[in-house]
Image (tube, rainbow, N blue to C red; front, side, top):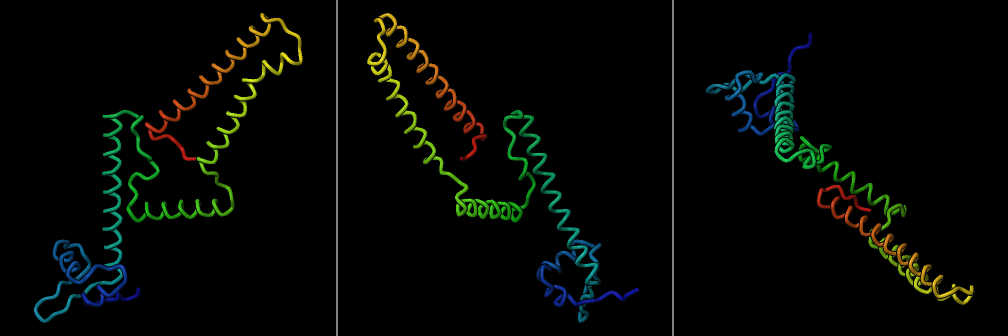
Length: 196
């Protein structure tokens, strides 16, 4: 069995990812299970490097798990008080700030790549294109009866009946569009709206 590597407080604190000397002194003092022999007058600390690093990793894992448990309890309480509709994005519940930062960076780079490839379309461009199509369609519909009357000989009653059907179709189309915008407004208020 290999002999444990023993380091002084300063040597141990110099290891990347290990807290500073004052923090280590406090940890050793407050945690009797820390794998170290405290220094006394004129005697240096003796820290088992492998065991010390394992202890620090276990402590960090416990801290992260405690934060996640707390976030989950808060989320559950929110669901109980506000109902299922108030649920937050559960994909990020309990993530550390560093984990959230990495996720945001990945999303940012994915968006940039998609933009460079021409895979993304701006919402304003889509809205403008749809608006142009709808305006052109409305103009053609408005002149439809005049164009029809020039090609087909219809009585006034027939023209009025056809105009009535066209007007009914226009109202149905407008109601369908209004329903779409109301659904978008409801999604945006509920946090479910997705960017195009």
